[in-house]
Length: 110
Image (tube, rainbow, N blue to C red):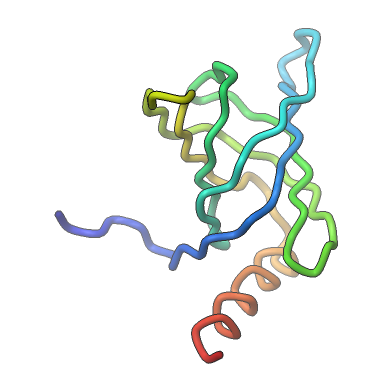
């Protein structure tokens, strides 16, 4: 199968807290990150999220810094233990995207 991703993916052990932004009463949901790139994130979650919706998130990266980001769900796949999601970052500052890219470069060369 041909790779369609334009950015390299890296595994990252972290958690996100996600809140829906469309005015509905939001609840915080913990998710498990599968991979992350400067363009988006893949994660697993037991909650049902909506494709196309934008969620507010707080991504804790390997340096223990927290990146405030907005995620738009672009892919959903049903798994045995919940759902697998793909989301793209919306309006992420270049500085935060660069942190992810730097980590990928360091990980490859160590």
